[in-house]
Image 1 (cartoon, rainbow, N blue to C red):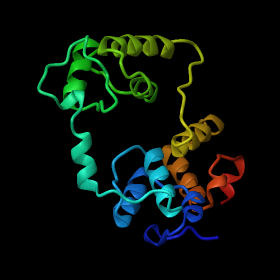
Image 2 (cartoon, one colour; image 1 turned 180 degrees about the vertical axis):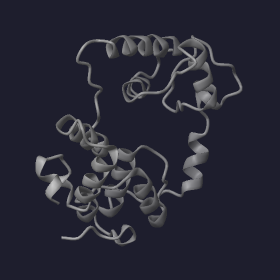
Image 3 (tube, rainbow, N blue to C red; image 1 turned 180 degrees about the horizontal axis):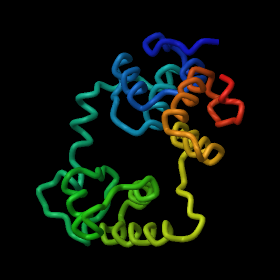
Image 4 (cartoon, rainbow, N blue to C red; image 1 turned 135 degrees about the vertical axis):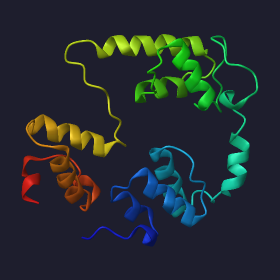
Length: 196
């Protein structure tokens, strides 16, 4: 079975049978007239619903206009007491705020983004506290960061290096690219990947 061309996807079954990057999913959304904003998992769900006729595509410009009013884009300065609302986005103002209150090298991590998304009504002080908690956990012996199922590439590369510590990223990517051409259930690292 050969991986289908990006722009020939017309069913949820075909869509879900293969690995797609977020960029590819956004391109399929645009082709189908669906809003291409959101995480990889959100785009996959939008496309699945679209192909199953469970939802009608929404014009991209209208959706963007509705979601623009967020904490990080208001004219009010951010403070430790600023509440996280359902439309909160991590824009330039939020990054600047967290660099001032955490560290100049501040970066959003998957667990921190999940904390923000799942804690509407909490304050930015709570986010700063969570960032410090996560930093402390990273220093524990044997710490391995959590990778959600949508980050198949990252998990594959991690597993590849755990099994092949002397190999290079080029080696890992070559194996991944061969795996990626297979149906979705095959995207887990295996020792036999060198034989592909």
